[in-house]
Length: 343
Image 1: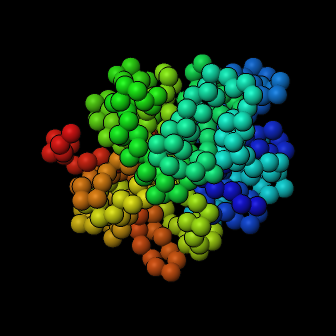
Image 2: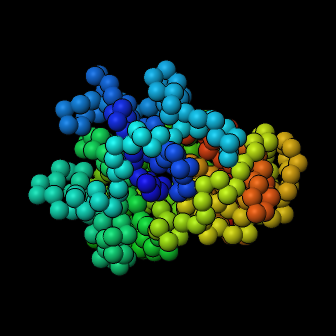
Image 3: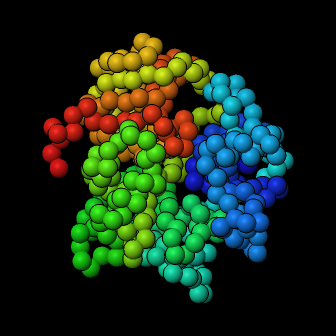
């Protein structure tokens, strides 16, 4: 079985999990629980109802009901979620889902907006349809046409860059269906993403506006998400092992941001100063939450706080991880001095 970031796994226990990585052990697919069956749930699919769960709820639910979905991972050194191979009922593909939406005889109002986004990236950016997909709640069909956002996927890191450049050129064009995010939407997005005081609203708005990976189509928020093509995925699960080493805060200069919108988002860093926590030769900062994807560019000086990991494989190095929980409480990547950066 092959599964990559942005796929969903539907299980024989009627659970929906989102794939979290590109490499998986032989006996399970690493993924995070997103939707559970619930007779009083706010989401519906095929006459059944479901509820969306956050990180704490997901772990508690699996501990109480399906502990076999949790395992102590020897590679990462922490407890992780993953669908056992024998529990996989279907791997939901964003590419296949988008194709079905485009060919749907009577798409609802949200799906019509998905088609508009796809049309722009096919026609204006010149990205073939087989490199485009739709994830999030739309992928398993657990969306609300009135309130759900659009998690649009572009496959291939160069294609993703092309999509963001295209959106940047169009987002202030009156004739374009894809628009820049206005004030009211920034506030809504901030409330959804930031659950502590790590980023102020003004900081969040500045970062998000310059990324060009989020916008609005007919009043609905959309994300332009990056996923690697199959031939961009290298290595095997277990080639590297990871040892948690505590919490650390650093200042560093970004030397390479090529994978800043991947999952995880990766920033190669140099000239690292340890401000808090264990001292270690940190070579990269990685984020598992896309709040901090695309947060910094090559040559910029950043501050970051998260979990320190020792990576052991062909080479041994240290990295700082942001997004060890979905809410990323107390973890961040920010420019050291935002006032020095021109808008």
